[in-house]
Length: 262
Image (cartoon, rainbow, N blue to C red; front, side, top):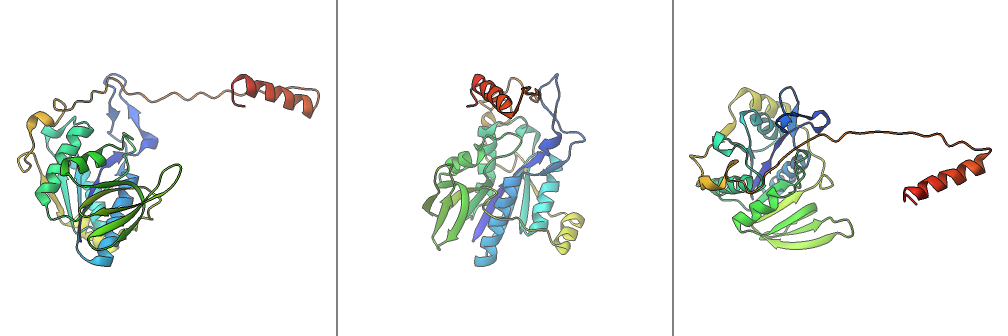
C-alpha cells in the first residue's frame, strides 16, 4: 500500500505573537512543531504500511525551514519526504494550498491512500484535507478514530459529537486523522541520525507542478484576512459576603441567574 501523508509545520501556539502593524504571526524566535493531528496521520500511515507493506511518503508545503518537520517525519519512519516550496506559493489560503498540494500528490502518483490531520492549530479551518480530496476527485472520510484495511476498501470509524459513524470507502481515498486515532511513535535513533546527517528532503517548486499561477499564492486566493489578533484574557473575582452559608449560597445563585449561567 502506497500512502501519502500531508503535514504542516506550525508555530507552537502557546507562544504565538501577532505583529500589531501587519496583523501577521511573528514566527522569528517561536519554536515550530509538526501539527499535532498530522503526527497521528503519520502514525496511521506507518501502521498500515507495517501491516501491509508498501511505502509512506510525507509531503509538506511551506518555507525552507519546514524541512525540519519533514526530517522528524522521516525519523519516525517515512520512506520519502518532499517539501513543496516556492515564493510563488506565499500567501496561499486554503483553496490555493489545496490546489498546490493536490498537484504535488498527482506528481508523486501511485497512491492508494492520502492522510491529513483534521486541522492545523494555527488556522483551525479543517478545510485543506477535504479540498485536496475534491481536487483529486477521490472519496474522503474526516475525523477518523479507527481504520481497518479490507484490501480494495477501507472501514473507517468517524467520530462526531453525537455518535460515531462506521463508513466503508473504496481506495484511493483521503482520510483526516484526529488525536484519538493513535499514539504517535518516537523516532528511532538510527533514523534520527540519517534524517539530520543526510539530505533526505526532496524539493518540489512551481516549476515541477502543473498549477495555474492565477490559482495560487496571495493573488490567487479567494480568502482575505483583514486582521489577526490575540484575544485579551481578563479575570475578575468577587467575594460573596453573608451572615451564614445559606445566605452566601442564595446570593451566589442570584448572581449566576443574573448572568444566565443557570
